[in-house]
Length: 183
Image (cartoon, rainbow, N blue to C red):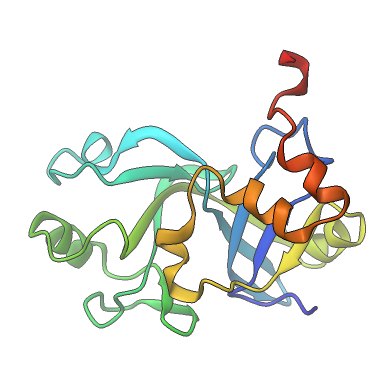
């Protein structure tokens, strides 16, 4: 399978000790000769959009997008017709865009949590770094079978369900404790 934007990365069970990426599902938002950018979809933080930007009265959850630039807010969405300057990831799925318009749409309740997901930080790889990590079995590269509904589809059990769907030895990992040392 070829690395390209719109695919998802599923963390291999073997990366247990990595706080950022343990049991992560990452949507690749961009991939080119210079590197790759993605957002961890399944790591909610204890913040809402209103906590970070008080002028926006919103309880939209904030997710840990990855370890790079965690002081910046990013977003993916499926409403490019409402948000100018959106960048297409794959058909019907976008990232970035005019944040002033996003603020207005959220405040006016014209978009909901199934339309947009916010992140602090992103996951990034230099040229060939992601290929190297795939070759060393850090990640499983997969199709995004949920397409633009992935925003709604990802929940706390998403990684576990991906392990079950992969079957074989991965099924065993689906029920392993997240922190084996706590066992």
